[in-house]
Length: 430
Ligand code: SF4
Ligand code: SF4
Image (spheres, rainbow, N blue to C red):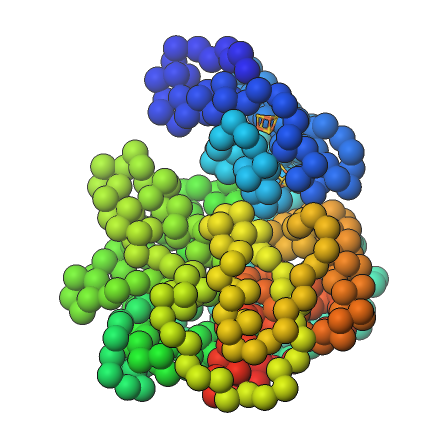
């Protein structure tokens, strides 16, 4: 693709990367069928290729972004399905990230929209506040249909029951049950530990039974993904720096073999810290080290023998790939192998994989598209569950779990909860 950037623009390393990316795109359109928003709307501007053109025009013009471009960038899920589909290696992930941050810096949204975007992300990433808001929202649930579609979708996502987390973000050590083979730091996450603390509890039970010492590292908090995905790069970078410093202190003072993440969206973000700080003289090497230490829980489990199976009559399972795990980290085989290894019968969802519409805070900011994608996904899942008598849906990301659970009668659980249950742990909560 021909580009028209000025020399001043080209002196910015990020803009240079954008230009390189643009030049790789040969307009073939192979990415279009993989795009969920294009599949729903059939509009070129709602496709990866269309967005690439719109962003190119926005960057070349150097004017404030127009509302049309902003709306088509906002409606991208950052699911990254198009990245896998592109034969030319266009780095769409960092291209759309840059566009979002450019829009954040150069476009003035209406005040209510600005307020809502900031508020939603602030609430989700502050555990105490988030828990308080969820409790309040449960009282409003019976009245949710009287609110606007955005507020309705927020309230509708609130789980019926909120369990108090037993393990918080404060420093803690969970010793290996037998002779220690590894020491790992578990990311507790922000939203996940409020919405479903049983995921971290199951992870710790499973890993300590596998003779790993699990630590919660003091000072590690939100990974920054939610802010990053709405263009608030400076907040995301500050959160990332705090985590990097805390993990490096743990690494230097007490030693850790890996950082373990059981929320796929957070894992994708932390593995990308190396890219986030690639031009930062102070944090470049530090960020690389943290990204290299980071593994999704399913990757760690693949390196070790799972504990012996103690459950009999395992139910049939349907497995839903979280986009952040499948496209963001290229992990599809490992969770399936683990579930089969502990005796679960696995059923695949037929057809092309499309995002369920969760995508960080997307389901709260773009509720109409998120609902359409959820319904599409659940229609396929329900069909499979009826023919295979599967009663449980497993996935590796809290966002997908909450999104799908809000529209199905199936029990929706995290993969690690099933692995823990089958090998001597607790039954996952409904
Ligand atoms: S990231 Fe997903 S929604 Fe966005 S353009 Fe690519 S395929 Fe479409
Ligand atoms: S598949 Fe890649 S090269 Fe082809 S139009 Fe999409 S982004 Fe461009």
